[in-house]
Image (cartoon, rainbow, N blue to C red; front, side, top):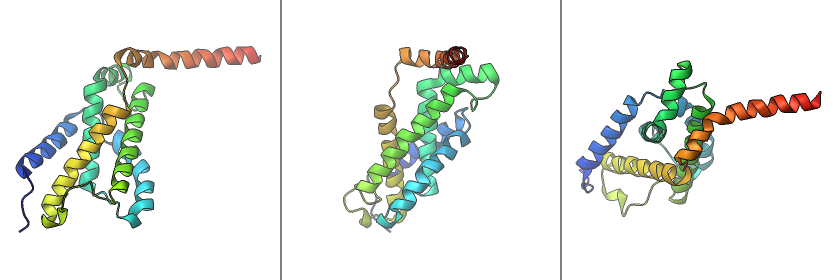
Length: 182
C-alpha cells in the first residue's frame, strides 16, 4: 500500500462534489465535451510520445469544471438563450462562450502537462499508490482548468451585455453591405 497523499479524503470529496455540481448544471454536457475532445485529441496524440496522457476521469473533471464555471459566470446568458429558443446550442453567444472556454482550457492543459512531461509537479509521486497519484492528478487538472478560465477568459458584465446585441449588428452590417453592392 502506497503512502497517503496529504488530505486525500478532502481531495476526493472535492472532486466528487465538483462532478456532482457539474452534472447538475443545465448546460448539456455534450456541448462542452465534444469540442473539448476535438481540441485535446490532436494535441495529446502529438504529445503522447512525451508522456502526455489524460484519462477519461480527468476529461470528465475538465468538462465538469467548465460547466460549473460557465454557469456561475454566465448563467443569465444561458437562461436567456433557453427562454428564447429552448436550446442553448443554437444561441451564438452561448456557443461563443463555450468555445472560448474550451479553447482557453485546452491550451492551458496541454501547455501545463507538456511542460511537466505529462504530470503536474508533485515531489516524488512515485511513492504513492496509483489511485492516490491519480486523485492528486485530477485535482491538479481541476486547478489548471479553473486558473485558465479565471485568467484567460475574462468578460466583465458590461461587455457580457453587449454580446447579445452583436448578432443584430452583424446582420445589419451584412444588409448594409449587400445594399451598397447593389
